[in-house]
Image (cartoon, rainbow, N blue to C red; front, side, top):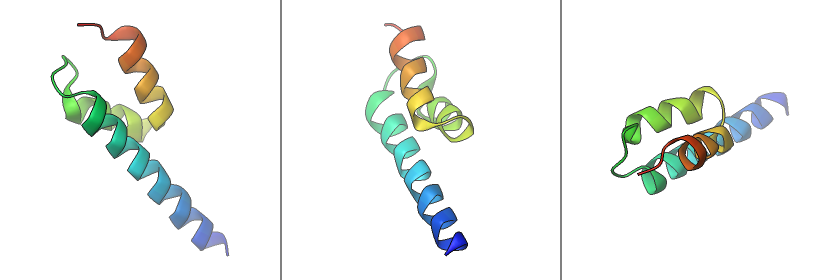
Length: 57
């Protein structure tokens, strides 16, 4: 049961990071890879907030 929960949480975290990085940061300073790294390191929600608050075109 414990390893199933870890796999589910990691899969959701990874999927959220991919969605944030691929759909939101197409042509920004940070780029797709940078936002993906921030989303994986902290959380997809933090990556989204960094994009929306700090990086403006």
